[in-house]
Length: 374
Ligand code: NAD
Image (cartoon, rainbow, N blue to C red; front, side, top):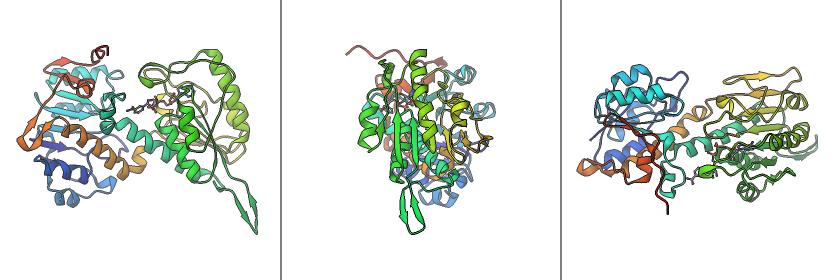
């Protein structure tokens, strides 16, 4: 069984789908691996490192299985052939034309973004979580870089410095990583989420969980958030207005599957922040939680607040991201048969496999049927 790893073609994408270590595991398990020349060079992995792990440098598009990060572009779909297997982000809800082109080509496509997240076994394949974890970490690193002062408090002969105050809105995977990183750097951290389950996780990291007076459950399907009532959003925004006047850094991560990101921080709130303060909006690609965010850009407001709208945070830690992304794919592939026997099995009774399957045998397989009642 041959596996191919192309160089990512998306603009400014520095990651590679499989780092040498993860591929080494697949080679040892009996796979032949073909990596495009310089595929890993922007994530610090030279061709030689792949060769040391037993990979071959060559054309990855002729392999039985092709692994990518970004959804395949039109020219990339054109390189695929009938019967070939693709592992990649696909976002089938957002790009029906791509799904149709993969179906028409007869490709068996697995959407890494579609791996079910509620099955504990599938956590090892969950690229959304591993990338969100990196985004949350990197959001704080970007904020620290832009902030013209310390994170931790200090008592020095030159004067005493109070710790920086950080507000994290949305305490899912990325938000919790931001909370943890900011705590590790010595800041005072506060967080808010609409899901009650987030409280314990925030508090276990030594951060404060903020509350609104209004009671409304934020628990939606599959452990995700639901869209909140206008009254709840107004109450939340009132809380954030007070916090913005006090905090040095605001990191937002609030998302609702299949919906635009809720607008939670107004321009006026950003204008109420002290000069030198920083906002980082991880929802920038989904429309942004902060009115002042410009997706993909860093801007400085007239009152001196830096607003970071980067949409490529995992790519800004490309080596780390590629390692974890690659481990996720390798775990997923190794769960699907026995490479030594050249056996790769697509078992539709495996919930993780069925959940991620987007096209197969000329058919669109997304969305998967709901799981049988327990
Ligand atoms: P996400 O990226 O979709 O959203 C980020 C956070 O924003 C969520 O915590 C959400 O509750 C919050 N949010 C939405 N609207 C908000 C609002 N108006 N105000 C404040 N916060 C708001 O979520 P995610 O990080 O991918 O994870 C969401 C859930 O999925 C969590 O319960 C997480 O534990 C769970 N999860 C489970 C697994 C697993 O079991 N394998 C893996 C990953 C995530």
